[in-house]
Length: 447
Image (cartoon, rainbow, N blue to C red; front, side, top):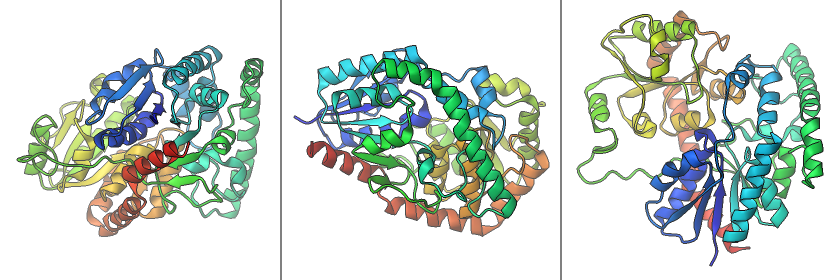
């Protein structure tokens, strides 16, 4: 019997696309589904087993923890090498990658999968699949161009630069020099870890993403060209659009949710007229000035517009004081998809993470991009070029007047919603989670 083993870090940015695909296969009743991730993902994996079993295998404690040092490096702004270098080193820490590789080898020997589906940041699982000769799909939960640096023309925006697609003369020079600095910085930073990996007889000593892509049976990207800037892509790269699971409300539920799915919150949304949803991702650690600027801006757009702001409890003390009644703050949102799909939600304040951005486009939401790190700067530039949103001028600096003014534009200029709906339709035509599941089954059956 064929079997499929998914392998991902527990961080939602990497985990969610694979959970959606595995969940779709479970919903269809497909047998032989396995999911390997860090222990903290166990309950989330179990929740996606709505049909056939989705068996969980733990790889231990969480590998990718964004501590203060890594967060500081990642949030220095666009066109800096420190963030990408720090992240690259983090996912290659020898004792961590070795542990994940060893556990994945054990899982492969136990399960004998026909196919694996592996997130790009899970180097240990990729190395294990290559060592055992298991065919795999490479999952890219960020702009696919980030993996194919050698394929990008010199006038193509370098990953983490935050540059637009059409570069002026000065931007071309800046882009060229930044790409050269980035390549050199990565080579220098990873040399020691590469020596360790060679000693372990790992072929891809530097953990080069392009080599992992070349060895893959297929590569999945969760976008479409037009949102992602086109580039000379390999034939086995499949751009599928966002991994949004089928939404099938139970009888008696509203189209946006029901009992057990945040019914009270959906009821609140039903009673509003024009809601701005603000969610800045799971990693954001807003500073006092940033929180105060957002609070001032969100207060300023009411009461004509209402606000649903997802703000962690640990950052509430940074608020300047009580907010007006039109601003509702929640620590946890039961379903972001239900919120984005609600007809009374009129705009989305987003940090520029790939999943959240594409979910916003899927539901036709105009977006204010407030990028704080790495690929978020690139996604913000793509949002502006695609006409689906606006972005902060000087991230990570947040200016209350700028935020309020840009939100008013998004809420009154219909072109942003029209473009977002257009690209949402293009994403749906790419096939989404259904096509991803079909491809996994086809590839698993061919091996």
